[in-house]
Length: 223
View 1 (tube, rainbow, N blue to C red):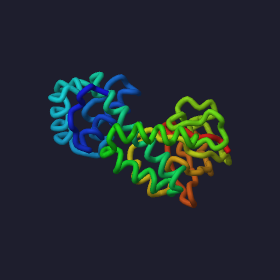
View 2: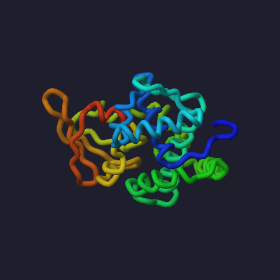
View 3: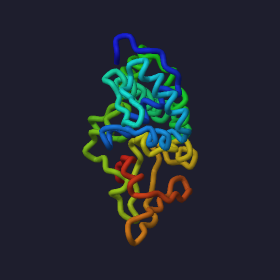
């Protein structure tokens, strides 16, 4: 994190997260890609990018791809980390339903002070919390390096798994969470089209049709 990070609105933090996710795939994010990911119009994107550029968080010129500065990437990672910690706390400590926990984390991640986040990390490590029940090496945020984690797109018809993490570039996270697809949810692969797309999954009794390219953004652990 920058030594003195600028004050950002929730909306601008969401833009940084979207740019970071898009850049992970292509090395940069075009304004049109950002508009699609955020589900907003291009003028809104332009205004947000100008504001972020003034704060030294993005490199942006008209008609060129957008990239995060070092400070911008640090802020985006910090917000994502807060979301993971909050969702982990709500699910594993408070016993909140996974979809409700994910929605609450989306709302609260922007307000969580870094000092409180550090205490939350310490608390969760002390409990040995994590999504992988029974794992001796479990800890908050360990899903990305978990040797048992695979993309949901790798599962075959009939396989079941627990959701470990969902990348924000999937988009429409609130909609999917409302259908039960969230961290901690159990998913089953019901059907796969002959050519591989779409894939029908079942979550909490709901059937969801998704493309394999979307399922690559969801990391799971087979059960």
